[in-house]
Image (cartoon, rainbow, N blue to C red; front, top):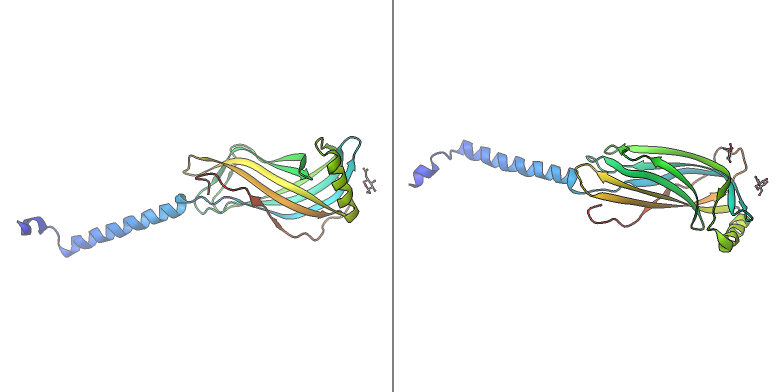
Length: 205
Ligand SMILES: *[C@@H]1O[C@H](CO)[C@@H](O)[C@H](O)[C@H]1NC(C)=O
Ligand SMILES: *[C@@H]1O[C@H](CO)[C@@H](O)[C@H](O)[C@H]1NC(C)=O
């Protein structure tokens, strides 16, 4: 009886089975590493230049010129990141938004391991900041006296990763300290700023 059930199991076939099992485990491990864990994109401000930042308290608006380089890196080696909503960068002073710039449209993708460099150049004669209020004016005067302005870049969006159903909110904040440079300046020393991501939702890395 026993011989009968084992007659097929020569050493050769046993080896094949062991090989199959090992291969299966490896494949599973690779798929798990590739798609099992989401890594959120990294946002870094590489460079920034503020050449004008004049507040008109009467109209509650800024006359400003700001250029900056925002780098977005997809840290996943197998998963692309697809925007399910437009991705925006909002500029804020004292927590109050005065500009909003679209970084990527709905449907735009960043491939696995890829980096996208956004060179943002913006300026306005009167970028309204209606919520600045008296407290904001006080803060502006204080920073103006120092010659260094604290401007926050807030990135917001919603993305989906390859092979995932969940849509994940992206919220990153980049606090910049910008020394006001004379108009015509093309570059100033700037310390790179790594943006801080808001805590992730479930299944979003
Ligand atoms: C902005 O302020 C600077 C000095 O603070 C001044 O020289 C310049 O004329 C101002 N520009 C505008 C458009 O108000
Ligand atoms: C500053 O911004 C204004 C828009 O208000 C634009 O016309 C001007 O060309 C900008 N200056 C520089 C140096 O980019």
